[in-house]
Image (cartoon, rainbow, N blue to C red; front, side):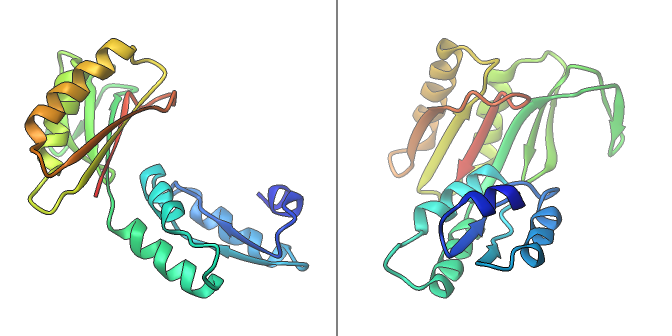
Length: 183
């Protein structure tokens, strides 16, 4: 990260870790850089980071931007659909290797032993959307076909209601079949 900051010609650099496990490492960069201002915005997920970046206004001072960007990030709920890497147990529930898992803001919500990623994603979206939801972005990963992604998109769009704008994006990410951004 320090090398990336040094390679950036800007006088002020904002770091968005987009992972709760990277925030502390990003903060270690700040004292290492003496020739420019480095600010870490502690975004914990990709959807938080995307929302923060969309809130950035190049005409505003950096102090105002950091507040606005973190306010935007705090208004995002993140859902993920992934798989169990090994057999385990969580909260008295058995998880088998390769089960499909649905998490909301990092907390396990759904375990699907049949490994049906479409069903898990639709159920997860339904559990995350409420009356205050305006946007739902589905980011599908490398292991998901365009056909499957479009099927999930159609199911969610039909159930989300007319007040929710649903967007489908090919993120190509590993590990996560889907990342859901709900605002």
